[in-house]
Image (cartoon, rainbow, N blue to C red):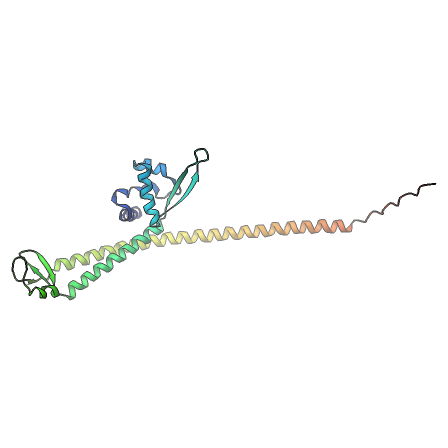
Length: 229
């Protein structure tokens, strides 16, 4: 399910033909761009063009390495699944808002149609035309299209289900990220404790060495012998 959602995001950003790039990156990190191009059967420039578009949208990250012998850079790419899902969630919420506005208009306003030409107008425009079609002269009829209303409700319901799936996926990802953060913080804490312990050992060692040197009796300085005349 997650792959399908990610492919939809990539399709929205770069076009449907580029959605295959998800499978090349999914579950991997720092994938060599030449391997991606080979897997997609695209040129390196075509592949980079897709990746740059995704990068501009903040959906992929990259690192680069310089070839010491040849002097050029190779890029290694990682798909940011969380950002992809958040991107899709935002897009779906916008679509839902538009559909709800359309549904509200259908349920609260009147629309008129010319049955002959199939032209539909809202009440304001129909009034301006004196409820008569300019093309054929036929009188407009009130259009109560239950199918349009049901279609709008159906699309909203489908998007709501998609949002439920996305939210569940995001909860899993964010929980995993939290675990990683806790583990990283714990590791850093252990490292700092170890470093402090090492410093204390060094200080104690130096202190002991200093105390030992202070306890040693000083050797009496030998007086120079007087020369006999």
